Length: 218
Image 1 (cartoon, rainbow, N blue to C red):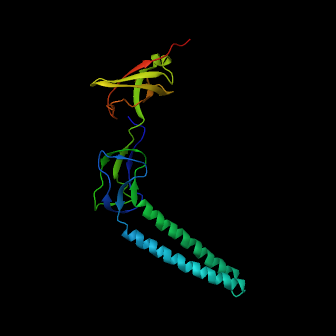
Image 2 (image 1 turned 180 degrees about the vertical axis):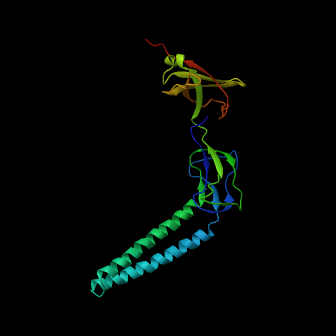
Image 3 (image 1 turned 90 degrees about the horizontal axis):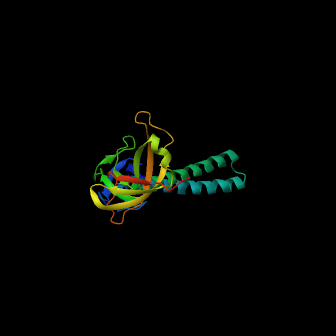
């Protein structure tokens, strides 16, 4: 298995305008996967910029009036509050445009694509657009009898083989031993961090054979 596997959803409501990746494609963290239609978002940005420009001019005018003692402190503070709100709205409009580009959350591969051009996605539905999977580090999970758990320690070397692929050989180390024994099966979960095999035959979902090689202990 892999440590990181997520379904990517949209963070703003919108219609898919373009798709930049396909299934099986390797991606890097932050790489665009799809882009929503930004026309309405850019209109909101222009409106926020105009509102900010007006608030800046208004604030300057009231600052001068206040300096000449021709307006009250309360009126000046009111204009300053409007200016701060205009700044917030501008940042919000920029954030929406940034979030309208759906990006890869980490380095990995596009395991599946659900998005289609022209399809509408909403925050409320939270439908997946892509499934992104990190190919490294690879992990293997084993369930060992509780009686044998004393022979296995974190950091022990492990040999990894694939019964269906004789050429696939890799090594790993025990990275986690569960402190809990499953009462139903009487087993303990052990996680092995697997080094990538030279031929890259190992893939998430494969069944593997693990051979634990504990060093001599007193």
